[in-house]
Image (cartoon, rainbow, N blue to C red; front, side, top):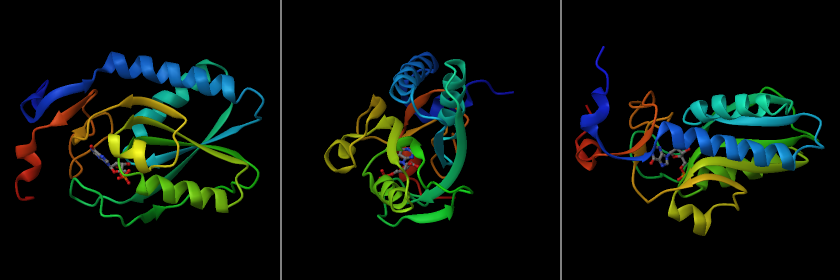
Length: 191
Ligand code: IMP
C-alpha cells in the first residue's frame, strides 16, 4: 500500500485526527447535556461528506448513553466544482417521519449555507419539534449568511479542504485528517 499517497496533493493540515477526535467528544458532550430530557434524538447525516463525522459523533453519543436514531439525507449544491452553484438537489430523502421529533442535522462543512438553509426549512416544514445543526467545519461565509449554527467543531479559512469525508470530485474522502487541497489540483481541467 502507499501510505500517505495524498501528501503530495495537500498543502497543509487544518485539523489532525486527534483534534477532530477531541472536538467530536466536546460537541457530543454539549449535545448530551442539551438533549438530556429528549426521548430519542433524531440525527440526520447529510451524505456523503458528513459520513465520517456522523459515525464518530454517533458513537460518542452512545458512549455518553444518549439514545438516538440515525437517518440519512443527500442534498447537493456543488457538483464537480469548488464553489456553490446555489442549486440544491435532493438526491435522497429520509425514510422516517419527523413530525414532533427533535432533529439534529449532522453536517460536514458549511460554506455559503445554501444547502443547510434549505434543509432546515424543509425539516421544519415537515413538522419537526426542533431543528438544530452540528457541523464539524464552518467557513467564514457561513458566519454571515447561514442559519445560526449552535454546534461548530472548527472555524476554518475560506479555502477548499478535503479529507475526513470531504471530497474534491469524489476523491480524498478517505484521508483521516482534513487539509487544504493544493490549488493547482482543482484548477486543472477535470479528467
Ligand atoms: P454550502 O451550501 O455552500 O454551505 O456548501 C455545503 C456543501 O458543499 C458541503 O456539505 C460540502 O459537501 C461542500 N463543500 C463546501 N466547502 C467544501 C470544501 O472546502 N471541501 C469539500 N466540500 C465542500
